Image (tube, rainbow, N blue to C red; front, side, top):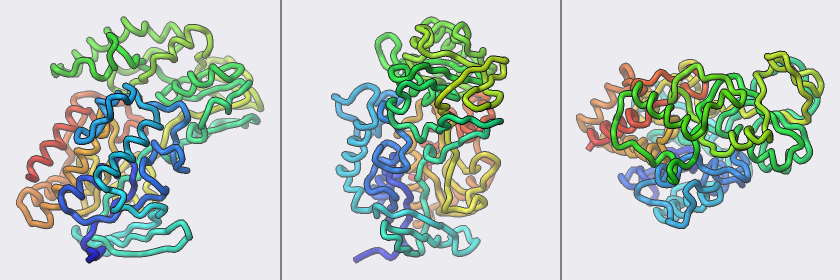
Length: 437
């Protein structure tokens, strides 16, 4: 007998966070219905998904053991830093192992989600559309949003007109797109640096335009994945910043000598660039470092330091915007650049509206997202049972949010709007989950 939708949770997305949500809801016996716009699991890491923004050479920037789900480790023969192909196999195996596909309607896009009333325990009306454009509407007990954070391009506006190709990294798939072209990559974040390294093998020339300094972390330190080193002793932020930035210079030198601006912030106050090859190629003259863009003029790009160069292709590695097009911003308590959610998960006004994956932290991994899902499942179960612990969390999420910075002063950038300290965040989420029993 099928459970009525009014007794089910609607789960949107079957990428890493959606799969974590499905597993935890399943594990705690909470009926749910998953919806995935693509025809299979994997989300971002499924390059066949039209909304996927990975490219042929994409690999994790965190190591597999720091990223995997604890209850389903990656096989030993998977590389330290897996490719998108290995990751898709991993998510597919995870879904098969726990029989999660049975709970998901694939090829089904969520068009609209709205509360039936302003009551905290309101039902939610969900409208979906299948591959044949057939729309269906049903009412659900709650909604868990897990449609990812890296799909909607953030393309800045530039002064002037560029008459070559102007693309965002979301449109980049392989270095063949650069063949024999003069390429300018805008932004030296992780994707920008990865793609610059790709480009040197095909392009006629490669430059990278930067407007701020960066900390570059090699993928290996002392022969081991960099993110697996240390972490046993908790140091005060100021001391960790001092020690780690000193050690980093032993391995990478000072990027300022390559033309990068000196960072106007301390280490860990913005996401570091994890890349062992970008400084190598800059040091070999394969990649030139340019200043911030002032304006375009035909094929010429003018930079703010007064220099100018001609290019055939400009690729904006300028990140992504949070995108929940099926939900009114007010329902998610949107404040400025991102929703303001309790523990980056719970909407303050409603009992059963939660978001998974709207969190960034260096080293959080998918286990960090899994712990979010575990908390959501336990809380929903507690609400159903009317437990004092669920009532306490309901009261807490309506109040002021806890400090999740871990004592770090993060840069006020759009992509940092939902950034947290990994240790402070996981501790808070685990504590909240444990309190739910």
